[in-house]
Image (cartoon, rainbow, N blue to C red):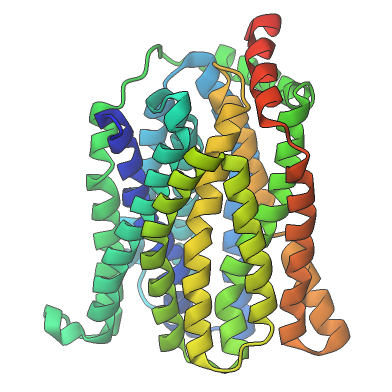
Length: 425
């Protein structure tokens, strides 16, 4: 069994996944359109919501590698994680203060919360090698994702019931229930972050010397690209990761729109989201076991094959029952491919450069969902067939899988260890 620090680390996924499920994927997009931006047209509210997401993502893309490098320079990954987690918690808790029609305030609070959520995950990922040994990386990484699916799913299930039947909870209407959902999400995130703060130990850390530390971080950030290029297997894996995770994220983010385009109701889509969450819990644990027995690379390859079949099947579904089965299939591989990708990358980075490299890794993750939506939109436009458009995503999995086959993990681990010795990092 993992040691207590590893369990405390994994519990942070249980904590912050509530934000990803309840706020990002669940209630905020709908509540923004129907409550805060009800006076705007549908296209205007979609524009501002998309702009809020895009601007928050851009901030994280810019900040992630810089912050990771800064943490490496001065130590204290846990300190930075705590700072960004508190930023996300407070912003989420303040969302109910935005009155009806005050969509600019709601959008601003949402952007700050997303930056807190994404920024904390840069440092969360970089702590993985500090709480798990080489033989347990896959198991601990998968434990985190599995707890995230379970925790986010349990809270979301209660919140869906609360929103659908507010009277059972002593609430006057749906709007009040959604606001309570935001507050309970913030509390959940805060409370279950405490074990990581108490039990995960990290050596080093000193007072911040802003001018000197920022200059040092910028210098090291400039070297990060050269560092990655100097590690051929690490670089090849990152390119492969960028392609196949783009396909994964495209399916995650386009699933609701795809279901709506097929004529399925919003209630059906919420059920499908819950199904994905609860299936993802045991499935991520299974993939962690497979990663230990077969190797993380082989487990990722299995998930890529599954995603290829999912995309082909998705283009042919007719009934809502098939959509539920599709949600089950996605849940079986979604957490697994994410967890094993994180643990495999942890094996391919030089010791002492965790924040720097994981900042770059998270930046690539945020740059994902670029090719996929463009491919889907282009195919849909040229063919006039929404079902056919999802087949274009298979191209991303094929390219990512082909590049992954060329990654030599054993050689990459040797290169990473030797890199630290030769470069003094």
